[in-house]
Amino acid sequence: MTQGGVVTHRWILAGAVLGVVWGMVLPAVLRCGPVARHVARMEAAGVNPAAMYYTELERLPVRPAWIDRRIVRWP
Image 1 (cartoon, one colour):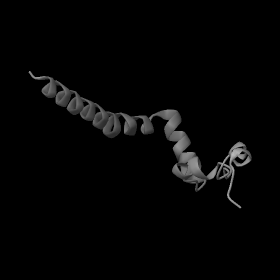
Image 2 (image 1 turned 90 degrees about the vertical axis):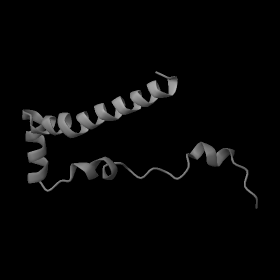
Image 3 (image 1 turned 120 degrees about the horizontal axis):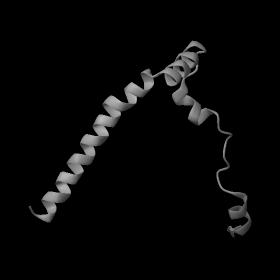
Image 4 (image 1 turned 45 degrees about the vertical axis):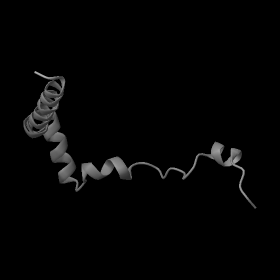
């Protein structure tokens, strides 16, 4: 088998593994005890867990303050 064929097979294998994990393993984890209870509690409270990642953060500054101190701006 050529080098390009080996690389192609590795990408196909990686995609298949990712598909199995995404399509079978993660949904099975959602149905297991502690995770299922947590999801049910979030849904009962009307919380969208997917939105929590973004909305629970404080607004970050556009630029860090140290950059503003070092930047020389034209008048």
